[in-house]
Amino acid sequence: MAVWRATDGADMGWIALDAWSRRNASYNAQETRKRWEHYSTSPPTKIGAGTLFWIAEQASKETVEATEFFDPWHFPKAPLLPSDALPPVLKAFAEDRARVISADVGAIAWAALSACSTAIDGHIRLHMKRHDT
Image (cartoon, helix red, strand yellow):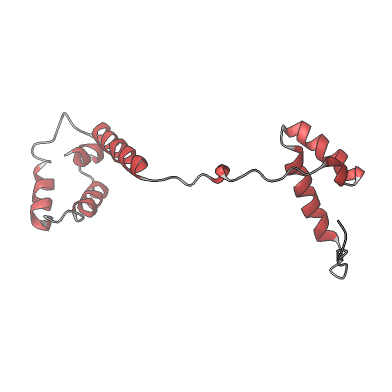
């Protein structure tokens, strides 16, 4: 009834209702269509789109309560990037941009380092000292 009233009996409403009804084990195509056509002779007056929104909200609450959310911010914090480890130009850039957009200096610095690393020739390699502490 609510779908019929919300769509004023339009074909789009019928398609949505039929698809939704098919999910029920006791679905009967003829009975569902017969009921839909009956509403044009005796249209519902106390039920409509608001009812559909309320039902959807209730279903959404049930789904949310039953679902465990993945929290990407729950992971351990990344180690801080010491600002003196940056070249002076990148340090100044990261501090300035972080101040302007109210962001973490380390986040801007990591992004700047990543961008700069793409400009380095692929033949350059980093060689770690074997016994360096």
